[in-house]
Structure formats: C-alpha cells, structure tokens
Image 1 (cartoon, rainbow, N blue to C red):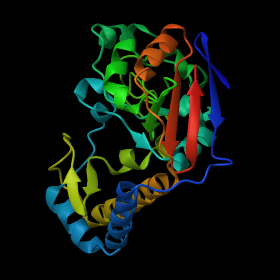
Image 2 (cartoon, helix red, strand yellow; image 1 turned 120 degrees about the vertical axis):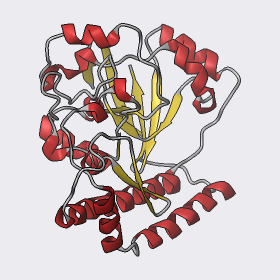
Image 3 (cartoon, rainbow, N blue to C red; image 1 turned 90 degrees about the vertical axis):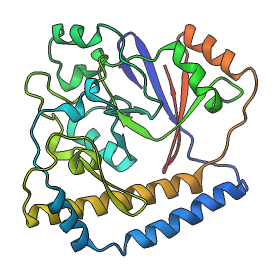
Length: 277
C-alpha cells in the first residue's frame, strides 16, 4: 500500500490458488503463433540486422521528445522484470513506477503550460504530478470491464505526469532519471522489431551516421528485447483466465470512480494484480 496524493492505492496479487480452466481455441491459437514467432526470432541474422541499422543511421539528439507526450504517443510498455529493476534503483513501489496499460488519452488543455510552473520533484514525490484517470474514458474500456465494474488491463506502462510526459524525465535538462535501468523500449528507440522485421519510430536522430560497432550493440539489445517481450506475452496468454462481463459493469465502474473506489485488474506474465484507489 502507498500514499498517492490524497488517495490510498492498494495492490493485491491474485496469482496464488488460480482455478483450473480450459483455454479457448483462440487462446490456444495465440499461444501457438507466439511459440512459432519466438523460434523464428532466435534464428534472425544479427549481422543483417546490424547492416540495416547502419544503413538507416541513427544518433540520439538528446532532445527528450520521445519522452514527452506533446510529440506523440510516448507510452513506455514495461514487463515485470523491468519494473523490478526500476523499483530497486529508485526505492519506489511497483505502483509508483508503473500503471495499467490503457488506451491513449488526449492532453487536457493548458496542462503543458501548467507543468512548467511546478517545481521539479524528487523520486519520493513523483506521484504528486501524475496524470489522472478521467471518468469520460470509461466508455472506451467497456469491453474490458467485468460484471463487478472492474477495468481489466493487459500489461504496464511507466507512470506519466499530468501533462503526459514521462515521470522520470527531468524537465529542464530532458535527462532520464533512471537511465542506467531504463526500459528496453527506451534503450532501443527508435528501432523495434515487429513480425520479424526491423521497424523505426519517428525520430530526429534517424539518418545520422552510426558505426558498425554501435549497430551491432543496438542489434543485440533489439533481439534481446524482442524475444523477452514475446516470451513475456506468451506467459501472459498461458496464465490468463478470462473474466465475466455484464451489462451493469460500465455503470458500476462509473459509480465506483465517482465514489473514489475505482479498481483496475492488470494481467501480466506473473498473473493478475488488483489495484484499488
């Protein structure tokens, strides 16, 4: 349990005593596809990937734009092992490091400017400037709300400030406060692998010269990230137990949020975590 502003957030793990269940045919198909992709990912030609990266070119401009919401979707997905490394480095709790992976929301008008007026926070006070969850967003989650009004999410993202910037981004210098333990997504940006192919995100550093040594190091990190995320997703699918839905779920969720007792259930490779606050 930890204090967040004026509310209390509690984390309850539900990984023990899981009931036996039958996997759906769709779930079995997803698991089979993931196992096949993992096998093929391990056979990817690292030298070919490194050559592609060198041809594209990249050099970080240290602009911090990839960490700031104003320049696009800056959500950073993290797996449980990454959360644990950051937690140990910062002495923050798991729920202070990451929150439920949910659909992107627009930035409220004026938040970008108001953030500049707030003093920079320490690790211990990061949650004071966190983004909040709006009741209007519940409509977009209706397919993920169970019959008790709890919202189910799949995976975690790093916490963000009210203006949407990463909570670990220093406002004035745009430096990362957790750089030594930053997530794999951050250390391999703007590159990623999807369906066994190298892809890039929008970034001002693309096109700049990069040495073959740096390309090989990026390739090593990319392949490790790709396989780690696939394996983590596989564990999630294998452990997941579907939840009951009901027509009253959305109404109950809205009422709970109004009363300050809103609940998320986050599913990940380790099981399920219930977050109430």
